[in-house]
Image (tube, rainbow, N blue to C red):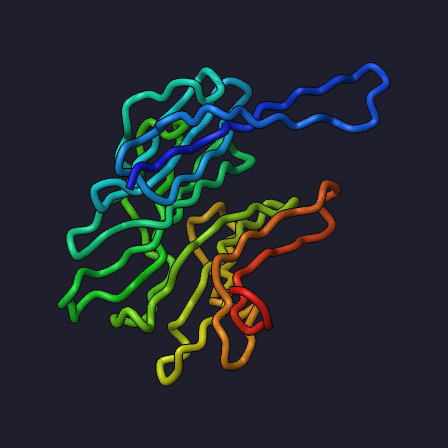
Amino acid sequence: MIFRLAAFLALSLSLAGAKEAAIKWETEPVLVQEDGHYGRITRLDRKTLLACFDWKRAVHVRHSTDEGKTWREPVKVAEWAHGGVTNAELLVLKSGEVLCFFNRRPGRGNAEHPFSIGMCRSRNGGKTWSDATTIYEAGKEFENGCWEPVGLQMPDGEVHVYFANEGPYRESTEQEITLMRSKDNGETWGSPERISFRKGSRDGMPVPVLSSNGKALAMAIEDNGLSGAF
């Protein structure tokens, strides 16, 4: 598989009497990382984009200072001796620090190490990263894992991480969306909270977003408990 962050978003705004902003997509794909997977991009500042992806069973980032036209050499964020690291997501804090959340998946035949949600921190715009810390551990079996973390910072500074979680349902195939909170920029975390669950089904792939005024929070999920195509 070739990971292409295709069609970087280009904003074309006409401010003279325009009622709506026009969004135009470039049609020529840009290759960020060959054989990379699960790519995500965030903006560090007005000049710099940061892309994260998993590659060779580890999480990496690349920087761009020309709006995604070219990308610098990859920087390794996290790897794991007992399996692969994937599902990376970036969160730029109000402090300027960058958090990278990811999913650790133990290798086949590994009966000692559980599926987990991990995190690394960068204090210099993604140039270097801290050692990984573990936020949450699920089961050791594939059917009892945890997946797809995503971070969000609230207006009051509280940091959230949401993820799909089979851990509480060891006797079924059910899955929930779990939330964990931090009041100190990710240094410590509270207890896991169930925020989305349909009995007999599998809620997954959470994508939270704040309203423009910061007073409302919406979240899209993958829900196989509804009728129609999944």
